[in-house]
Amino acid sequence: MQETIAGNGAVIDAIAPLCTGVNAVRHNSDTFGNGYHWFRLDDPKSMTKAAEPLAKAGARLCMASAYNRRQPADPRQEICYHFELDGAVYNITAPLADEGASVPSITAFFANADWHEREMMELYGVKVSDQPNPRRLFLDERKDKGLLDGAVPLSVMMNGACSKDLWEHILKDKESDKA
Image (cartoon, rainbow, N blue to C red; front, side, top):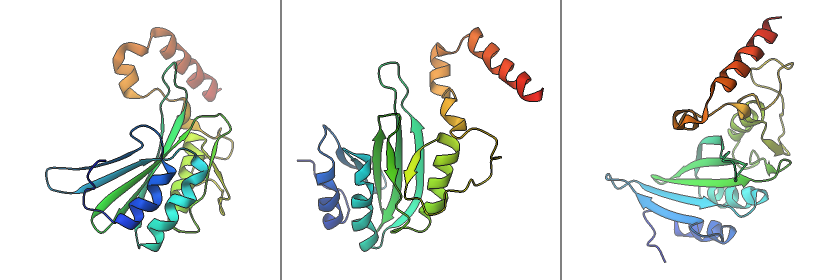
């Protein structure tokens, strides 16, 4: 068992059973002694079960991230909610393996999740169930949801995954938008 780094044991004990995969729970610290706790949920529907003990302990939702793990053999999105509690960071990750997979809203526990969830919905096409305010934040309603979902990550581009065909496709789309 990995030693727990500066953190709330009750919160860790409440979230860990939701994460049964290999290396699904990790704890580490940086050179300054800041503690980081990483939890990879087995099922995105467990997000509210993970958020509840954090809310009860007085944690603060700092940020939420949506990102693509689009490798040829691994097409999926993931989301991660980042919390702070007593100086330690708790990162709760949920894989969205299926095309129709969704994550439940945690706005009932953290009101500021509203903005983060709406941003993930608008820019990445992440489905957030029970989101109380699903209106768009800033993109025109005529634009497709999940606008950034099709973006090529810089790391993939730098690894030579981009080609002349990709840039021709991008430029063609740009010209059709002007028309």
